[in-house]
Amino acid sequence: MLYRGKRAVVLHGYFPASIDYPSARPAKVLRDLGWDVHVVESVAPPQPALEGVRRWSEGSQVAVIRRVAALRPELLLLEGWTWMMGALPFARHTWVRVTYRSRHRLARLAQQRLLHFADAVAFPNPWEESRWKTRHGQLLDLPYPIDLEFWSEPVHREASFWASRGLPPPNGRLISYVGQIMELKRQAQLVVALAPLFAQQPEITLAFAGWTVEEAEEAAIRAAIARYGLDGRVILLGNLGREDLRQLYAWTDVHAINTSSETACMVLYESLAARRPTLIPKLPELTSAFPWLLAHDTKVELLTNVRRLLDDPGLANAQVRAAQERLAWADVRRHDANIEQFVARIDVH
Picture 1 (tube, rainbow, N blue to C red):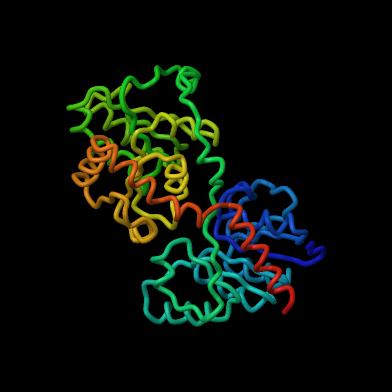
Picture 2: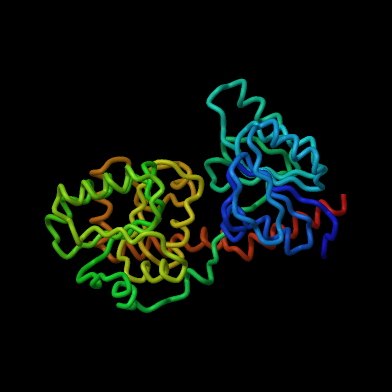
């Protein structure tokens, strides 16, 4: 069914540069269904254009709410800060994906009350879902999506992946960490935590993939490399496209995630889909979705868990196998179908 002329607004704190990005994909699905899609965000500087979507970058909270009110959408999809829920009355139908939960009791009560009026609510992990009350029929099963078919396709290791970057292929086992270089991802801490492993196993290589968002974190990584004499054994690959990232996973023996904050952590889903043993920090957003994965609170636990996955292939493979049902829940095809079913449902009301 096409929805020519019906207007949808996606209200976002900071919308990604591409509507193919997991958190942005609903805009693409609605666009392809024929909706007149507008993205409204609370960012003042001009942002990249989005094909087939009108983008409004506003400079204040008041301007954001006014923009939504002026657009008078048939459907409002909201993801972001609590104050954005003030836009809910200006749309005929509304869908909220987990909003940030206030630390203050009265503000949380207000959040909960506002959330009650949304047509649909979605959560990216079981822990967030447990913190909110939803009424019967309100819950929309809509994860951040992954292209399960792409990430699960077996690929052969290609030495050209390294040669094209002027690097030799690893001559032993490889630990990787995919994520933007920034303090909350704690890449420098990972180098420090694994220093004893490097000292004991000279064939180990650690590779970081992701562009540098915070120069201070990259400087901390390079300082740790110098301190422990790890030049050539800890590598910063920079940003990788999907094909190159899948190639990195093909070379990876353990994918070590060390972030201090997450909602869903898409690289966790992608690396497990690529059948790479992956360890996580003890964040309830992650452990609630993957309770069987090795998780760490401290650098000592992190080091211990890396060693366990490297030394016990049976354990590593069992963890990957256990993840497959959760990965199927997040598959992009299921995600898109659920959006289509949701808009078809509200279309008859």
